[in-house]
Image 1 (cartoon, rainbow, N blue to C red):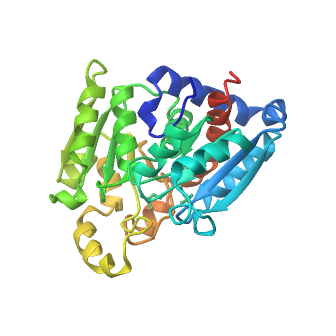
Image 2 (cartoon, helix red, strand yellow; image 1 turned 30 degrees about the vertical axis):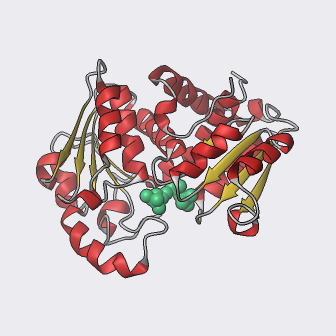
Length: 310
Ligand code: CP
Ligand code: NVA
């Protein structure tokens, strides 16, 4: 059966660990993998902008001996003259992997339903699995462990990155405080909370929705934040969102409450003086660029795993 990666919990904890360990191996010895996807093609469908995802997938595929096609959905007949099932079936005749960045989760679910090749979610409104697998690699490298951590997330929690962080913390049995405004439009959806509660059964995870910033930061190993203006949020909401989220900004006072060796993470793109202060993102605890680099390595491992190369 063809496997897909639509959200991080499509993999078991053991599979996540296997992919992360392979990524570390690839990072340490990239040449060894330079022909592992020789002659293979990755199709990358983009409906939203990207810097990291596009460049790292394209570079990664080339470094594995394969070829990547960037395809902007606005240039395609998709949604106008062609439906998703036809797109998935046709693309499956040409390429070995389909990756997509779309606005609506249903679109990537449909791509996966009709494709005969693995589909990778490069970000929708429900998940960002490549990011979170890379982030857990980064945490493992920095902390020399992936056990018994506490991660605190600050800001917009009605959010793809937050959802996959919650899923991954649940799978790994971590503590996670999700610190957001007390309003449904900025909090995780019920369907995600239900999945988290199911995933946490038996793993010892404790994922909580809280509103006290300094209290949440206490004892944290990882302080994480994401954009207040995710792709597609209308510009006219910026002032309102800025007002709502400012109390949840990651400042040096927040970092001081965390463990002394805590790291600061942001999946990027980031706006200084919005979701975090300049001092924090450019400070000594910030690992945002190591985090960005690992997208390259982890995505190579994900592609090899889905193509059953290890
Ligand atoms: N973190 C991330 O996915 O960045 P891009 O939007 O630049 O791809
Ligand atoms: N939540 C952000 C993540 C960007 C990588 C967004 O959807 O834009």
